[in-house]
Length: 245
Image (cartoon, rainbow, N blue to C red; front, side, top):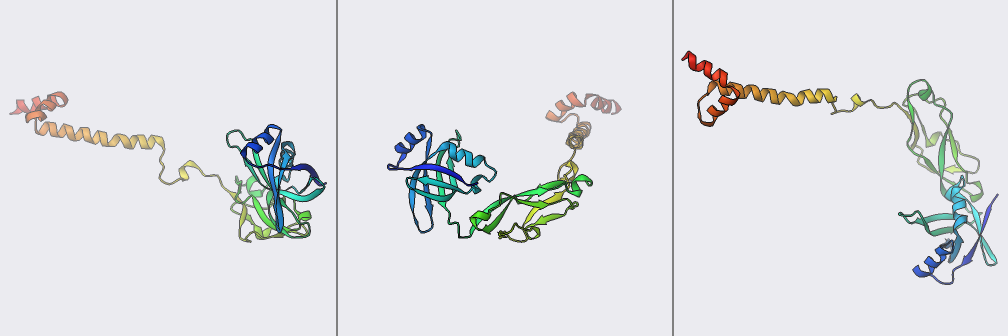
């Protein structure tokens, strides 16, 4: 069932006019297409929200009516305030129902992979969308890919997908869509060492330094500042040597 929304032609444009529209629950929009003049419109915000909440989201084909005219269209782009998530502007593209269009369709896995169920793997989504070519009436909501038989390190590529009738996949055939991967363990990452081992290694230079300082203190007990240090750290060894002499 095709959604139909009603719009109004905008007689005035600009920031001030757009602000007034938003205060009324409307959003400024522009409808354009190949070989047709662009039409500035005002849309009800709730209509755009309804479309974006549907399963097909921006791939939803709908009719937009304004005055005595009505045209088939899709959402091309939405401008949203990053701070408030408020809809600011909508770009609509007019669709010719008898001409092929290129569009991205979401990929959805079907089944539970053998590599997940029995081999400890997980489904790694590499590419979540396929680009297809078809007539507007044939745009699929999604394309399901069977993954039940996949073992560890096996994948599904674009060339393995059978598209619905009337749909041609134009994504590169070698593009990987999903891969059954094995979770990484911490010890598998190169260059990382357990915390306990790293702590022990950090202590070794300090021990060596103390030993060297002790040896130097025994060899030169009475030289300048070195002698004073010997009294603090190695006082007893220094006295021992003095008695032998």
